[in-house]
Every structure is written in structure tokens, then in C-alpha cells.
Length: 512
Ligand SMILES: *Cc1c(COP(=O)(O)O)cnc(C)c1O
Image (tube, rainbow, N blue to C red; front, side, top):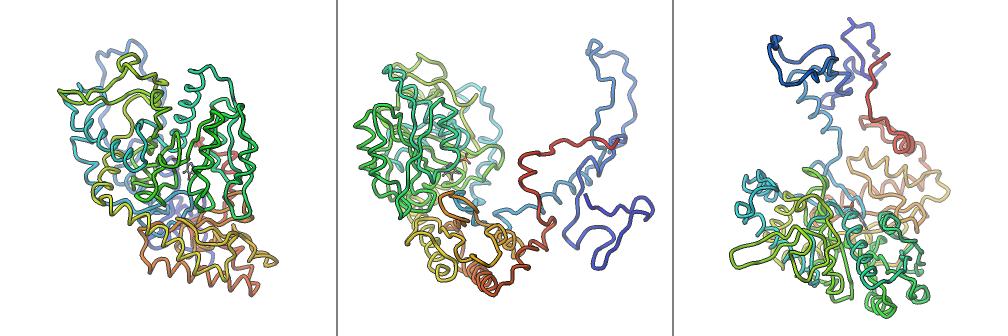
């Protein structure tokens, strides 16, 4: 940490030209670790030591120092506020991270999620005291079934990847129930990494399916690969190249004819909600990332939420708990055998899912209405196509347009310039933009996946387009140095991201 320490009477002060003595830069403050800011030997508040006369710890009381940093309340508040200000956030700037759907989180949803009747209840409260919360979960479930055209939904998975796991365990349960030992899952080569990882976690082998020259699943290779050995296919639609998979029905028919299942990764549902129902396309299970499509913050207030919708064939295997509508109210079924037709696969989480996310998602749906949701998906696709059309004469795109909700570019336009996709991403940071997704999907060389979402104004898109066009012009002029230096205005420059991922230092150790 490069903080110039003034506390030692100035001995540690270095002030190279243009650098400040404090290490802070006007409103951008430098911030060390909390352990470096607070000394563990002192306490942040004055408390008179208490003489313990009798305790109930039976000799198990702590004898060594607790080792927490001693900070006053204002020091602790500043520490966390300063850290938060070093972070890119959807509330501070354009965040076109492809495949992540970083849309605006309406304040209405935030306000409703904080209502005490939703925020301050406990999952073990008597059911009759939380009928409103159960009704909200049931209403959200109804909207999800309606929007996807699927007969059943489970609300408890806590993220998209957790939903995938839930869907594949349901498929495995269905196979087990009919004594079927097949164990191979098909995954397209452009798939999100969670798809093959989920299949592997369920004990399945993964077989890759080729893409066509226009970026879709190759139907002929798929048909060839499908057999009585195949568990099913995991397919994202629109896919991770931002393209709609046209052959959904033919794919579903080929899978079903072989006794296999069709898992759809619904992370990109924002592009088709209100327009296409996966249930009409022959899908058997699909997770929905509430934190992508329905505006709940990514990781806000804890994990996200990844409800899974099921076809009739898989519905009996949906995990517990189930919500039953009964004459005197809603009832949670918590144990196997309490619902006669169900063969639940078990549980995906301890309780009922992410209540705060459910409130935000339903608030988003109800405030938009079905017509508003349809407009949101249309506007998301329009924004992406606006970016694709405005850039593709100078930033190369691997596939012929139009695209769905995200615009995919490659690095062909950088050939011979000495500039890489990573350099472009780093320089976008200096321009105040969160970089787009880079080097994904893997099927495209030096991929840049830009997802603007429906919540950005044309003015913001135009600023981004202008910056990207200027970058392309500089690249053409051979100004590689300006790119390799970037970012120059960020609190940190280029980090060793590989080392950070492979050898993370997650623990502070007191100096020797
Ligand atoms: C985001 C995403 C996932 C995983 O969802 P999480 O909520 O991050 O676990 C899976 N597939 C695709 C295509 C995604 O974009």
C-alpha cells in the first residue's frame, strides 16, 4: 500500500512532482486496510474496564487479545465509504458488462424491500404471521410462470448458477425415477462457464457442440450427438454471442425424441421477456436471474436469486419448500410426503429464498406491467443494435447483425496495432466507463461483449460510441502507448489479475 505516512513526523513523506503529501487526491481518498488504519492494541471508544465478579463462561473466556482494529465510529464509517467510492457501480456510471444485464435498480424496489413487514420477518416465524410475505412469493411465482409459459417454479435457488444446479438435479432425479443411467450433457462451445461446471458438479460428463458460422448451435451436429446416452442440452437463448437461437423447437424435438431434457440458461431473458415464452419452445427447465432481468441488485443485500421454472415432466421433482394455496390461507410444505404428488429432490437452501430480492422483482414487474416489461426487452435490444450499428464500420463484429440485447465485437480491427482487447478495457476505465465483458465468449478472438440494457439514455450511448470511435482512430494511427499505460486516472493502475485470482491474499497478517 502506497500511503505516504505523515504520522511519523514527516519522515516517510515522499512528494514526487504532481503527487500529494497525503496520498489523497482531492475527493478521491487513498485508503489502507482497516487493520493498517486502526491499531489492534487500542480501542476506538473509551470504556472503563469492568471488574468481573461472576461470569457464566465456565473458564472458556478469551484470554488473548481479540485483534480487531481499534477505530472510532467516524473512522470506521470513513473507511467503508472511501472503499465504496473506489468501486465502479451501476449508480455511478455506464456499466455495459455483457452477459450480466447491469440495469438500473429502481429506488421504488429499494424502498419496498425495506418495509418492516418484509425486511424484519424471520423464516421460523409461525406461518400465520407471514401470510403477506408468502402471498408475495406466490404472486411473483405466478408472474414468472406466466412470463415463461411454464407450469411450475421453485423460488429458493440463490443465483443463476445455483438455479442451474437445481435444474440439473431435477433432471437427474427424473432419470433416476425411471432407472435411466445416461450421464452425458451437451453444451455449446460458446456457453457460460457455469453450464459445464454445473453439469460436472452433478456427476455428468460434458460434450461440446459446435457453432455454425453465424454463431448459433449447429443443428446437424446436435442431431448427430443426441442419443440414448444423452442427459440433455444446456443452451442459453439469446445465446452468449447476443444472438437468438432460431432452431429451438427442432432442438427440443430432437432431445425429447431421444428421452433427453432441454435445459435453457435464462440469464439473457431480459432480451425476450414479454415476447417469447420458453414454454412454447419445448424447454424443460430454465433459471431466471432476478438480479439481471428483474432489476434486483447484483449481490445487493446478500446473494441474488435464481428461481427455476419447470415443464410438466420435471415439476414433480421441484425442491422443497412448496407453497400450497389452501382454504384458510397459504401453506408452506416443508417435508417430503406432505404434498401427495410431489417427489421433491430435497432442498436448495435452508429457508424460502431471498425475500428482499423477491420484493424488488415483483415491484419491478408490477410497476412496469406486462406492456412495460415488453417495452423494456424491446428497448434493451434497440440499445444494443444502436451500439452495433454505430461502431461496426470501425470496430469489427464477428457476426452479421442484427443482435439481441448485447453487441459482440472482436479484435480484428486491432490487428498489427500492438493494442489488445485488454488495453481497450483498461482505457475505458479512464473515460469513466466500466469496461465491457472481454475475452468472452471464447469462440470469438479478443471478444468485447457490450450490453447497454434498456435503462441507459441515448446521450450515454452516444458518449460511449464517441469514445470507442476515438479509440479505434487512435489504434489505427498506431498510438499504442496511450493504451498500454491505461488506466492512469484510476486509484490503482494495472493489477496482476492472474495472481490476484490464483493467489488471493485474503488475510491481513500483523507486521513481524
Ligand atoms: C450470469 C450468467 C450465469 C450465472 O448466473 P449467476 O447469477 O451469476 O450465478 C449463467 N449463465 C449466463 C449466460 C450468465 O450470463
